[in-house]
Length: 452
Image 1 (cartoon, one colour):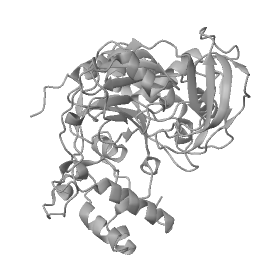
Image 2 (cartoon, rainbow, N blue to C red):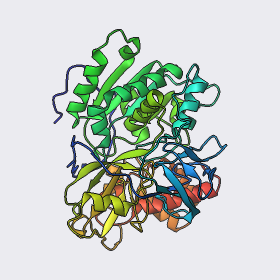
Image 3 (tube, one colour):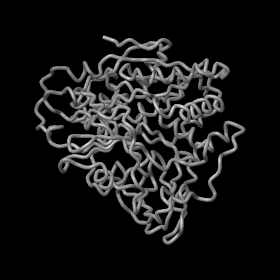
Image 4 (cartoon, rainbow, N blue to C red):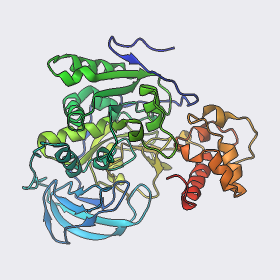
């Protein structure tokens, strides 16, 4: 049963098949964020994004200011790295503090405790689309819903592509996480600065803010802001659209379909159907940079899980160790599993020495009562994975074809349409790690020159 929606909220235009209804555990809903003190040291990997890693442009013993660029790349698909404290570069070495565990260079900065802004920071002068895209790149903003794709590259569409709709992803369908919900309730002005500037400089006619129907307060606050100044013509083309609370409503292709009715074909991108999708906090950070000149230096993250004494949203300097964050929040007991992100698509960390990176939106410290690691058994042909797959795939058929190395069949079964949401794993009574097989199949297809 749908909840009563505020006047002015529009209903979705299309509905997905499948999906699941996990326990949401939104324990930190609208809780006032707590700011974590500046750490004594931060460790910043030179790659906190999809794409080309940056190269350090500072040396050991260099003095740096807050917001100073310390690593960069000439690649289009990249994002600069900024100092998140002021102080001295202590070391530059190889490590594995990224969420994927890949080896990258890490710049370690010892804080001077002053949080002294870099003297070269300034508000960007924006007079064209190119100026705007450069400003977004200078901000260091990447996809903050968890993907980490450089936002400036996403805005820089290929020649001949026309974007007519900006879809704002406010679904936040992963259990536990509440940072987008908080932004839509409390950081509305900078969010709309980012939103309206994106529409203006990219010449986008319409924006749709897609929100699950369990976030009525956010809908009310956004509508109130949109309506408060009718002189802003651009606001006439901003709609708030609601869809039912169900995972994975926030997946990019799904939210496009639900808000616009457009389907993104396998192997294609949202811009191929005239759509740009940006996360709420991505637009918020763009708005902050445009207004202040201060790049992305901190992340508001949800810290939760049964090992956590008091679940809370914490504003954390990027580069802070996970151990320090958990120590600041306080634990009931030592966690047996820590996840960067949500329980469905997050990444389990191998060491608490790893650090908070740009695309982190949550830390979950879990005890064994939160999860089970059951032994895999044979498929019982129940078809639950097929029934719940939002992309209409046949996960077990793909798995069996992969095991037999029947890659033509794997491709015919459209494995590249898999969004790795984890619904198949969640419902499988045989506890088969289907997402693992789907990822392996996709990797092999790419190696064979299939869809990217």
